[in-house]
Length: 243
Image (cartoon, rainbow, N blue to C red):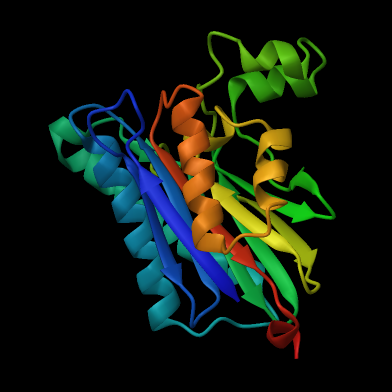
């Protein structure tokens, strides 16, 4: 697999509350975007990412129950962030998005909480796999507003599910069959909120390495405003990966 990754605080933020972890040998990739004042968002995202990574390192993924494995991992991360938020006054209310991609046996397994996303780049098009857990997306799903209206809605960043927000976490799970040449993007809303799917597709179409693709994606987000922290992890599936 060709793998690239990059994170940036963005053009308007003083610190970076995104976190990510690349576990290439395990085929696991993790991205999180923290929320909370006094740098608590940074603590939440890093804690969640570290908890997931530790769980993967300490437990063998059961191919017969990948969903159960990552549900347990997400709950472990959730408990840790939630307990920290309850214990320390300065961390009260902190939480984080979480998206995990696991490549296993010719399949991609995705675990998602919040509005960080996974996209597939396939045949020149960007396909959003995950569904945002946001107030605005709920309005779109209910037919109250359109997708175009959602982009400019005053509450577009209000998430409805997050790791650490409650005692229990409820992730969504997705499963994708892999094929050679498929490209996968994990990103926070600092990227997908600034760079359109069409512009993403144009960058992927240049055929660069995944490292250079990440650099161009992040640079594009900053050029387009850079209003939030930006994180991108890009993976290209090769013929060798599917043997």
